[in-house]
Image 1 (tube, rainbow, N blue to C red):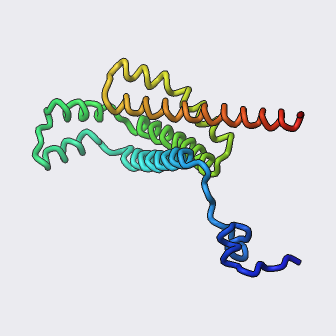
Image 2 (image 1 turned 135 degrees about the vertical axis):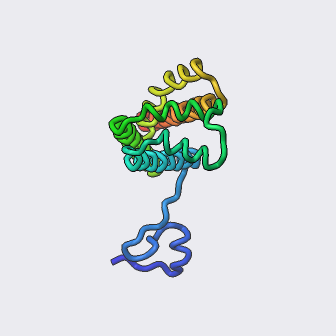
Image 3 (image 1 turned 90 degrees about the horizontal axis):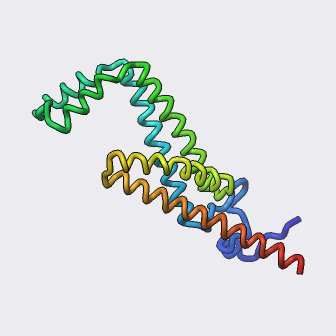
Length: 187
């Protein structure tokens, strides 16, 4: 039978004992950058779920008419160069299109949630998943910038490039440490 430590406060502080019966000590993250990326992925998953729910809720609503109503209500010009194109595009949305949008956003919500929780728990497979996902979408982001450059798109590209570079760095570092450990065992 395990003997309880003489000073339970010191044992908990040192991490040698669980927080209580059936409870584990709070998880300590070793990599704050990975934690930040994980929380960002989980935030994106939440936003995608909200967008998907909105698409389902409004799938049978005439969004162009609703937008025109609100534009008139707040006394804006519906033929404004910023508002008019939005209203024109809203006329193109059918219930089937809204259902496809909802399906796509829910798919990405699941992907972001898997990536976020995997990175939160510092799983190597999640690093690879985010690395592949980000690398796959970079050419699309570059294409979008060449088609219509703006600060937001450039910021997203730079952010994703930094995430990609950091994850590549982590994987190379882990590989080198593993190789060094194997070489130390051999010698």
